[in-house]
Amino acid sequence: MSDGHPSHKQTIRRNAGTDAESVQMSNTPNPLAEMTDGAATVGKQPDRPNPSFEQSALPGFKKALLGRRSIRGFDGQPLPEQTMRDCLRDATLAPSSSNLQTYELYWVRDPANKSAVTAACMGQPAATTAGDLIVVVARGDLWQVNRDKLVDLMTQGGTTPLPDPLAEYYQKIVPMTLKSDALGFNNLVRRFIFWRKGRNNAFVRTPVTKGDHQVYAHTQAALAAQTLMLSLAAHGYESCPIGGMDADRISAILALPKQAEVSMVIAAGRGTPEGLYGPRLRLPESDLIKEV
Image (cartoon, rainbow, N blue to C red):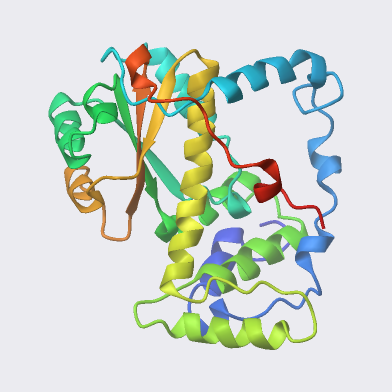
């Protein structure tokens, strides 16, 4: 870079080079609180929420939200290709922790693969009658690859520097939080750092175990899955998230790496009347919504 500083790729490689470097704490008091200059770079956009949305967007959103049901019977016809692609693109707009987007969406189009995934869903009607099947995969192992891609995008290929708080966040805080290893050494170090830093101040507490990392990854995948199902509803189609399936078999069908974990399968298509098994039932709001 022209200012004499190392490039973002060199910095990232250095920070990820050793365990000690990867868990080094930031010298910035609070990078999260200091990232307050977004308005200067993003500015106002007409498609961001504003009071006019209550009239223009809310009715359609409510219709899609209330119309989305878990349908277990479809007419078997695939969605139009461009519609399915648009729904999948919508899913990628889901919120994601640190914007790392650690998930993958597998649109199962090959007939043999679709038949095999259906069998791995144990022949449930939602799978056997669906027009399309989408396998939602948690990819927590991709945090570093995706981080590097994001930094490359944000710096326009390394030609412009990241603002200091943002550089601190992606080059130190993110690796300190997410870096793991087969023996769990980083998790042990992380546990100690979180305990020490959190004694007197608010501080992140997870992930420190393999299970924590799995929860993190599946949370990102679930956010994308819900966004996909809402988009399907808004496009006039129905869906059903399938959690009762043989994840190991589906992983083998899709030739997923061992670090990848199947989160759910989403069946999509035009629902049939008999595919809706009953009225919508929800617990009382007072059981779910708490005011403190």
